[in-house]
Length: 545
Ligand code: F6P
Image 1: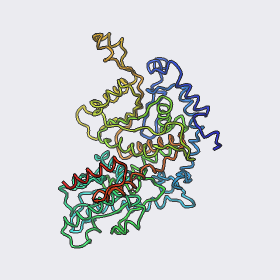
Image 2: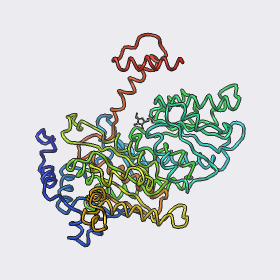
Image 3: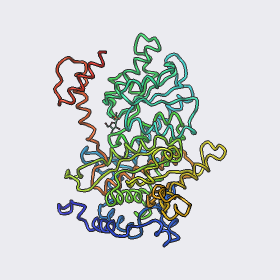
Image 4: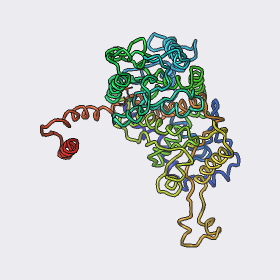
């Protein structure tokens, strides 16, 4: 890219959007809907089982046109094609980005260098399936001959959030004889609480770590090994073979830890941690929902991959969501983005998306290493509805900050009970309507509100939301939802010109923690800044007390 092109805010396409954002009056949803009775069906798109309503956004045809022009100028299509072609687009780690190959159908081709990686992907999937069938069929027994009933995934970040989120989301599809738990935090409370009351003879640990060097995971894995051996009264390491398996790209480190390479499920450096739930990192999920369920999950991803790859930008769900985020983040001043699923099982989905989005696009330099002159990834947050309505929605409706929202809703519940699902759905639809159209002071007064209360009972409206509607939360629809957000994040990274596939920002804290850890138990004067020094001194006094 020529230097003069490096400042994206100087692009005519960027300038056009900045002009539109300054236009007065700003777009009003009441006016836009009144002017276009077809808006509710025109500003909508579908892919696979997902229906996206984006009519309640502060956009009109001109703004959308300008956003698509910006995407084209940023080379979104070429960058997408480069990813699917296996080009090393993760330039700072000199790697391809091929999580899309993890859900390839047999016979598809994805190349990393000269090699088609799909046969390797399917070889691992087959060995995961064989293992899962043995565990689920009580053919894989613990050291004392008991069947496995507890699965504990030990991992953190991308090696935890994906399977933990998906297991919770798909409990209805899971084998209830098995209980999965997820231990991630180096805080010992996590391990102790997860394993309290658990019978070691029936427990299988999956140590999941791409690098197999992560402090938290290695510490928890060592604690788990000690817990198992103590619980079984073992005099040697023999039980480890039946109670520990590993998922990693680092087979050497797995072997050094004492896990049999035969019980290790591999993946590859072209899979980023936060893009790995559909790799062997999903082993705990496969154990829970079975190999067939896991294949449906992968097929869901594939549906959206094909859509993302082939649909025009204007009809492309991930592109639309991404560009709406760009509009609010770069032109209307929004700093955060809320994801509010109306399915209780998606309780961990916002946390999962936090890593996906914030680790990918929380970047301050461009691919070329220049400081960006525009905002990049938003703060992503959320909770399932309706709970959030009774907690933080106040700010969404009447606060001073613009927070675009994604609502996620389903036609059928996995547990139909009485009228619950209709009430749940009535609430999600009501929230979108209330945010968009609000209640004017005149309307509040006409309802008989005392004059002094009218300002408090007025809702400004024009608070934007998307609604994603799917028939039911199943392995396939969950795969579609995850892929939707993966590609949304990809498109935003392309528009902002950043590398969405590294995460160097986590390194400094790790290095400093490694330095501080031995100092906490030492007696020598700490040699940090005065604030950190004093905190170390006080901690030392407390741990001695
Ligand atoms: O420190 C951040 C990170 O590297 C994430 O990107 C990753 O998902 C997580 O740590 C866990 O890493 P690993 O799978 O190598 O243990």
